[in-house]
Image 1 (spheres, rainbow, N blue to C red):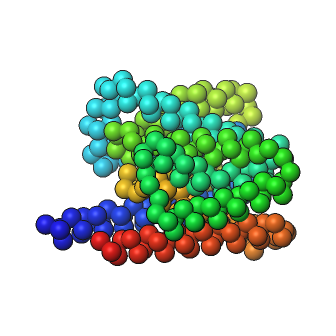
Image 2: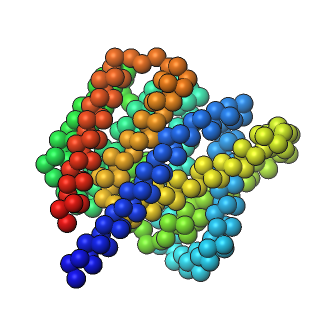
Length: 301
């Protein structure tokens, strides 16, 4: 019996870790994709992401024969309200991110992705009563030092960073606990967002200012494919959220901003400042300690 339980825990944990790593790698590498659409207004891109994601997920629901799950959730007002709220959280996160990029707050936006794992740890401890082991606590403190160093370096209250971190943090917390499958829940979230997104895109089409259908096959294909870049990592993220501690999920998130960091420095030639090097070192040492503790813990089962 013990062996069976251990095997089940190992398989669930491995599936969760692989799902989380895949989600954050896709998010981390996505700037290369979005750069191909830089000639289109960011707000228009977001609405295309929502619309095409819903179309993709609706097809997936039918293809994977999960339509009964989708329809059953539509009959549960409480879960619908929760998913409506999470859809607001994720759309607000997207909106603040795009606003920050377009208004010169890109440094605060990047800081938000480093703060978010700490927020996940905090929310997990407060709402889910998750407890950290000694080495994990040390890792959290080291990561906090890295974030604090960046905050001091920017010399301003990072309201953009905190908004990004807490909106996605609460999204992760709520989606971890809501009684809805990853696919059905995400489809309903995008369904709520798809209504205003469709209205906005139709409005642009009537004005004759919309990009879709006017920018050539290459751009049209990239706009449609935003469904994959948006929906697939969110699906993987929700799968991981069901199987991992929120704290563990939070530390996996460092993969995304690290990939973005490497793309900016290595691929796009952005300058690397001493304060960023220091914080980067703190965060990666913390990640190494947390990962080592997790490996030791799982091997002791």
